[in-house]
Image (cartoon, rainbow, N blue to C red):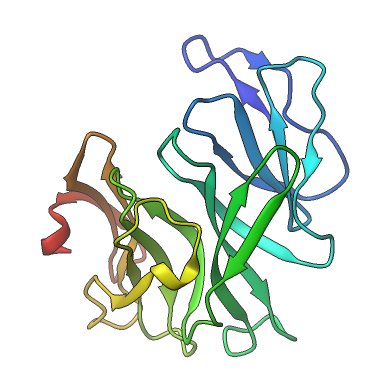
Length: 212
C-alpha cells in the first residue's frame, strides 16, 4: 500500500510493505489513520506518527475486502465485505456486509447474514451516514447493480440497524447496469454513477438517488 502526494505526485513513505497481497485502503475521516487488507486480514496504521507500524484488527483466518470508513469524526465505523465459500465461482462465493467499531488497538466486527447476492468491489457511504450502496451481482451473473442499505442510526456499526433495500439500480438488462455510485461529499442528493453498457464500456453520468 503506497502513498502519493496528491498535489505534486511525489511518492511518500508506504503504508505497508510486504510479500502479502495488500489492498482496499480507506482513510479515517480526520485523515490520521489508514485501514487496509493484507491477504484479507484488516490492518490499521496511524499515519500521523512516522514510527507507527500497521496493527492487525481482525483475525488471520477471516477474509475481508472493500473497506469503507464512515464519513464522520464522531465514531470510527468501517463497513466491509466478508468473503467465504468453498469455490471461486459466483455460485460458491459467500459474502456478507459487515461493520467494525474501531477502538485503540482492536475492532469489534459484526456481520449481516450471508447475502443472496455476491457483494464486492465497492461500498459507498452517503454523507449523512444513513445509506450504504454496495456493488453486487446475482449468483448466475445475469443481474448486476448497486444494493441499497438504510439505517435510522447514522454511521451505525450494528448490522441489525441496516435494512436491505434490494437492488436500487436498474437490473433489467443482462450483463449491464450500474457498477459504481458515489454520493457527493457535500450533497447526498447528488450521485456520480458509472454504468456498464452492452459493449462492455462504462459511462459516467450524474443522477439523484431517487433516479438510480
